Image 1 (cartoon, rainbow, N blue to C red):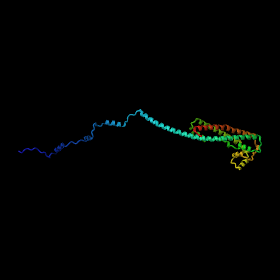
Image 2: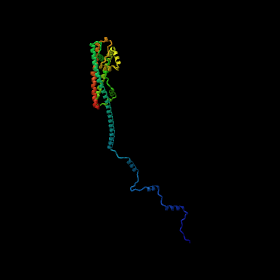
Image 3: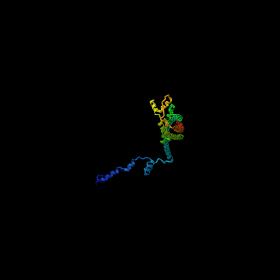
Amino acid sequence: MEEEKSPQPTDDNPQQQLNEVSTDESPVPSVQESTEAEQPLTPNSQPVTEQDMEVHHHAHHDHGKRNWKSYFWEFLMLFLAVFCGFLAEYQLEHKIERDRAKELARSLYEELKSDSVAIAEKSRNRIMLENSVQYMKGYFKDSTFSNFSKQFVIHFHRTFAFNAPTLFEPKTIILEQLKNSGSLRYFKNDELQKLIGDLTVVIDNINVRREMEASYRQSYIIPFLIKHFDSDFEETTRKLGAQNLIDFIAEYEKNSTEIPFKLRKPEQIDTDEARNMLSVFAITYRGTRTIQFQKYIEVNAELLKVLRKEYHLK
């Protein structure tokens, strides 16, 4: 008998060969296992949970709870910033007002100074007028209307022909600006404001007197002049080069020139009426000088004094 031989593997069974190959190869890891394997391991590494993520999120935005002191300091800094801005604006406005007040004070001062000189001159001219009126009153009482002297000619013209030398018109440009624009508020001195008010009243009174004097001249003095004035005398002064009668009479009084003079229609002059007319005329002009002019001079001088002291003017 032939010896029995052990069976030899053959390639006739494919399934068996596949199983054998699978058994010999190492197993392939899954995707999850691969990912976990790639992550580095730390000593305390733990899985990140949803609660941990929420805590981390809040910690990123919360800088700590603010107390009342932080709010107080913020309010204080804001308040100081606004307050400092207000102070700066107030100081600037205050400086502008001071500068404006000094500018107006200087302009008013110059205006008052000019008027103080003018009213002094007008007052002197009024005294001359009053003296001439007194001369004419005496002449109409005791003298005849013939052979008129040089002195008569001078006093006649000063009495009847001249108005401008005695006419005082105060300058009120700055004063009106102060009142109408509200700029008077720039003057903080109470005495100064009171004196400006007094000056306004005095000027109004002077204007009223000036209108009254003009009305009297228009009603009595000018009609007398038109009726009795010697136009030949005025014509002669022109030929001598006179620019106006006022300047000519001033020079005529000083020199030795004699120019013939006469009154027109002297027989129609009512001497009593003429003297009464001149008396009222003198009273009116003297009253303006001694009351209204004098009051203006006093207020003007006091106002100049206060302006010099308050604003250091010269």
